Length: 149
Picture 1 (cartoon, helix red, strand yellow):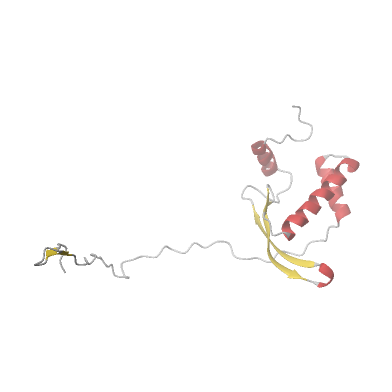
Picture 2 (picture 1 turned 90 degrees about the horizontal axis):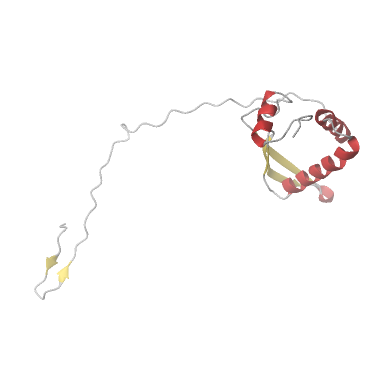
């Protein structure tokens, strides 16, 4: 085939399709990236079950708060968390991480079973009140208890 148009006897120009020039490289020369091995799955040890009252007491002790002030706020936050996850929304809670529902199963009497996925933050999720928490507070501008403004 030619790339140039040809003229017919009556003066019309005929165009012909140009074939693309393709360079083919053999598969043997192409190298695949090396697989990156990340930590494997490890079963979590079974911990104790913490009820809401004990959870509220732990939060109060950590935050040096009064129970009458903290309890309604904690209960409202837990209710909103349940509503967000049931609606399929994703929630990002530093320093804990990103949490979302990946599966839902309808149970009897309107109850649901949600399978949740928690992606922890790199900078110390779940380490407790330590340097990672202090570093997160410094990043977010949150003062520690007892700091003067």
